[in-house]
Amino acid sequence: MTFDIPFILASGSPRRRELLGSLGIDFTIAKPDIDEAQHEGEDPVGYVRRLSREKAEAVAARTSPPALILAADTTVILDGEILGKPADPAESREMLLRLRARDHSVCTALTLARLAEDQAPQYQTTHTCTTVWMRDYSDAEMEAYIASGDPFDKAGGYAIQHAGFAPVAKIEGSQTNVIGLPLETLRELLGM
Image 1: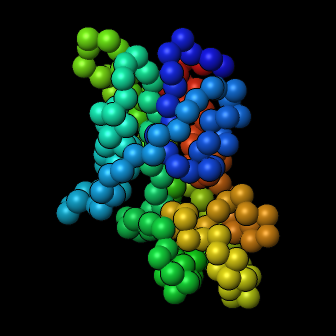
Image 2: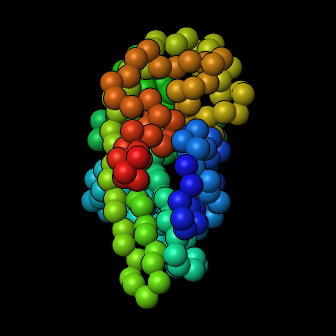
Image 3: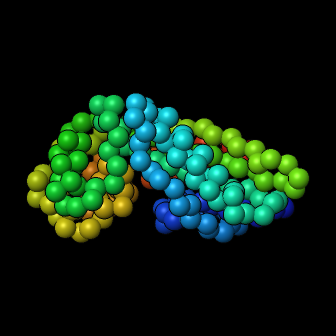
């Protein structure tokens, strides 16, 4: 699908690029540079919504209109706590042990910024949450996955689509949300 104005994905995520490309949308990439620290007292859904908006604003500030900018942020939520991207094998192990044989939520916020000539940018933010049940994977499976290096750029320290580890038993909701870009929500946002 082509738009009559440039479409920009405000993300460096290869998974988001692949998912957006699956819709046949022509787009370019602009990586946002923002502080992703959680604010004191900020709830997890409010956090991903704020980051999504700030990513869109950061890219909009350096983009000439007209343009459409899509920004996203995904987080894993366990017992009301955000599980970010693990910094090292020990943190990855801790997250995967906490998640094992349990359910948690994965929430992605999307912000669509519409830039038009001689107008203030318009921002629309929405979010999607999916419940994910992890399987009771063995310590050996978990250690092999950590050793692969795959967990370190993923919220919660895992990828639902990783064929070798396959950590998820079942989901309730959008699978593409868990990967990082809920296509059903995006289609609605774009009126597709």
